[in-house]
Image (tube, rainbow, N blue to C red; front, top):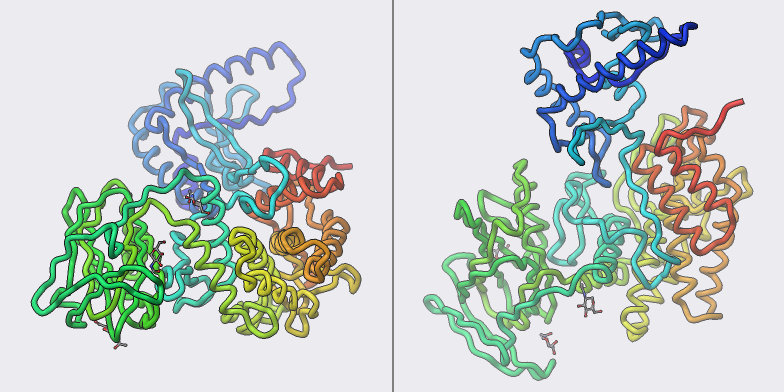
Amino acid sequence: MDCLFLKVTSPACYVCTIMMRLNLKVILFVIFSLGIFVTLSLWAKCGEPFIGRHLYSQGWDGKKSHSIQRLQEQDDSYVGETADRGNNDLQGYEEIDCHINGEYSVNCRKEGGEIYVPFSFLHKYFEVYGKLATYDGYERFEWSHSYSKVYIPKGKYDPKGVFMYFENYNVEVRDRVKCVSAIDGVPVSTQWESQGYYYPTQIAQFGLAHYSKNLTEPEPRRKTLEDGDRVMAAWQAQNSASFSRVLDQSIDSYVLKFTSPEAVSPAGISLKLDHVLDFVLSLDLKLKGNGSFTVTLQSREKREVFHLHYICSDLLISAEERHVYHGMGCRGEWRRLTRDLLVDLQKGFLHLGRKRRPLSRSKIKVTGFTLRGSGYLDNLTLSSSEHMAQFYDAARWFVTRQDPGGGWPVPVRRRGATAKAADLVPDWYSAMAQGHAASVLARAHHHSGASDPRYLEAALRGLGPFHVPSENGGVLAKFMGVHPWYEEYPTQPPSFVLNGFIYALLGLYDLKTVAPPGSPGAEEAGKLWSQGMASLKSLLMLFDTGSGSVYDLRHFTVGQAPNLARWDYHATHVNQLLLLATIDPDPILSTTAERWMGYMSGKRASHN
Ligand SMILES: *[C@@H]1O[C@H](CO)[C@@H](O)[C@H](O)[C@H]1NC(C)=O
Ligand SMILES: *[C@@H]1O[C@H](CO)[C@@H](O)[C@H](O)[C@H]1NC(C)=O
Ligand SMILES: *[C@@H]1O[C@H](CO)[C@@H](O)[C@H](O)[C@H]1NC(C)=O
């Protein structure tokens, strides 16, 4: 609150006007013109320190609190910069207290019949956003009602194509991702448990993002460093280490064979590199006993050196100073490993608790690669991206980690949203995870040309929990005992989360489309899809507040205040409805999406 009052006593930008009723039109006109003139000259003055800066701008993934905090930081500097300017421009204004609902007061300004209220107050009071922007040679104040973005679908939704707008997602760099496991190649979440665990929803989003990027990004650059025959690197063997190239008959390919001491130091066999811009490393590796490898990175300006070690261990990640360790398991069989080195380095910093920004691509280079222990290596490559390899890491995870009930259990406790709702105990299923998994597996089935039956089989087994009531460990709830609903969080009483339900529906649609037409699997997925769509259409209006949407229906099931969707979730609702509207012509989807989009620019349902 101190901060608020500090701001409102300063000559901040006064933009909102409250018109007082005056009968004489002429006086009104004169005052109004004067008001506009003074406001414009004030804007012109107070904007200078900000040109091009965004006070309240928001990224897709951002949280509201960030924007408010950013506002405060910027506003404070603004107060400082303008404090000694004097109030020469304020002639004609008087200070006046605005009493807010008789509860507290705010410093306003009065000029004739016009009252000016500080925007910093309006921002907090109405949760509206604003920024100064200069273009076309003059500056203006841009007011916006919400901070999120709507993605208009480019065409009919295709279960073999981009998933929603996930090509914009970068799951692994989020702070709630502890690291990408070097054993499985998928992200490890810390959302509800700081130790880290596999969260199937997050793993699916990682997979879907990479699949979507593969379809939307330019072709990757790839440089092979060693493949045993066509490309041979200039390895240097230290001390007792040695290497040779041999034919591995099991895969009919020449590979590099190496032998050296196991310990992290002294060095085994190594390569000196000077490689810029491409930071996705991939290699095929087979180890005898305890082997490891290390990639050395160097910042181009400060010449700091960082070491990324991949060791034979089930450790997730550890770090000390400039050394980051990822456990990759002990690879006694050929396994392919794909690592985004910049992500691995950033997770090392995160592990050390350093608020250090990830090093940008242009500021760092790869300077070395070292193998230790004994084993074989093939296809050592640096690329700008390896989206399909990362997608298949996620798809494989879903194939190998499914339980006999067809579920991918979430292994952590999730606190009940309210005192009246019980916690979800570890190993609960989420309809969103099950649906997302179907979206991943349907795409893997399609992309691999149906050559591996395991993807489709796993996706179909994943329908199991959709038939089991949520009170019996499944994900199926019934609204008022009638309308089936697939629960993102299978709470007691049910919560009816909207976005998770729609993601589950998309998974069902993907599966019903990709499974062979007429097969029992296609039919089962099709039935679940149509009964879910019927519920969505029946219940959609319950999520509409007239000025936004609610995240779930807990106000109804638990009898508490509605859980209003913050703008990024509201935008997700809109995006999902727009997408569904491309595959289902029922106007309730498109008209609701349109009205909800209007809420994002301040439109409201009219009152009686
Ligand atoms: C996408 O995947 C195909 C293989 O399906 C590959 O040939 C292509 O290079 C990839 N493109 C990108 C941008 O990842
Ligand atoms: C392999 O060696 C690394 C250190 O070089 C060590 O941290 C790891 O525990 C060892 N793994 C096994 C299975 O002995
Ligand atoms: C390396 O890549 C080649 C070409 O894709 C492949 O034939 C070979 O099996 C790969 N090596 C290993 C060990 O998987």
